[in-house]
Length: 532
Image (cartoon, rainbow, N blue to C red; front, side):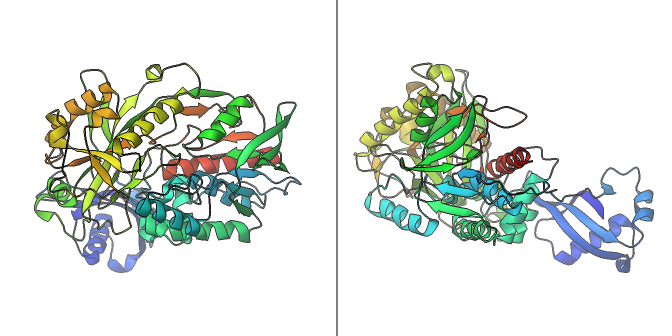
């Protein structure tokens, strides 16, 4: 195969034009091209009057060697690299199966790869299966009745199930683990376009079905999946894991436990700390969700082409470095999505963002965050960041009315230092309800000052971002874990306990669906090495 990189066409071109471009670039006859595969398609909207689709393409041709020789000095026409993930060598199943704690993207891919290798893992999940979980979440969004074990944070698929389902990552991946993740998603029912889109997404509606299919594949391969099963303790001997204790009353012998806990398993973090597992505090971020009409974002990003079906809902990614040394940045942007209630503890209010695959809701939303440094915590305890989060989540709960209604403030009021009393032209999407107010009641003063300085500057980068009627909904506090469970860089095992594998976002080693799934694959590889 020959790889052609960085070739651009008008974003709304016909397929035949791409074929003609390939033939022209390679200087071949149409009959000499056997097939082609799009490896990457990105939209370049820097020039809004001339939006382009930029391609990387692999092409199968007759007499490949001769064509490559002709373009030996051309950096944009080279042999296509191998994109296949190389599976570890399968090993004999251990008498005591490995335990995978958590069924988010990280846990799913640990369990899936272990099952594919014949190790018959047991994946445990404190929450419910995804279908039961949906019913509990809908009741919370409708009536404000929170189930602390079945919610946006806990249950099959983890927090990522109720998100935009973005599949982008900044990880440099020479071993094709990310390709493995995307391929498995497609096998489980994701649209094939995620294999080549520069900014692929799945959407919550697709994720629900895909997660169930991956679960069934794990079971078909000999693994077990157990819901409403929480890790409540560990047993060790001579510094090595010997068993997992679940639901306080069942002991499961094992030599390996993968901790794919997610960022909200606070009681489990406390248990691990009490058991002597090495944990350290790390920086994280808090802020709000900011919500605009999607049409405003489309116009700002795509100009006259806003709303074109070939472009879809526009995205953005913004940052401003403030005078106080802190930065304000957008995170987890959800085009055509909703702001959602994401609490997991009674009396604490948490928000997040979610989109369906079509991204066809009226509003766009994004987290608008400010970094929290370890020195901002009130103590040097490894779990101090959790208490910091709880403090402000509880304040948001009270400010909203102590009924899971979210405190909101319009950007215009926020910038004018006045409380909001009504909503404007932007209808908030958060359910079960909202309370207009002054967000200074549920955010640290330095966060308020930082966002207040940043908004006008971000508006210069994206016209309309600081529109007066844009809605800020508090509090966004779970963008990442406020701690890291320390692990050895080579073996990926806990530095204090052999056979314990901290993994994914909750352990401090990932920051999204793909990075968490990649870390899960690394952990599965490490457990396989343990089994050799």
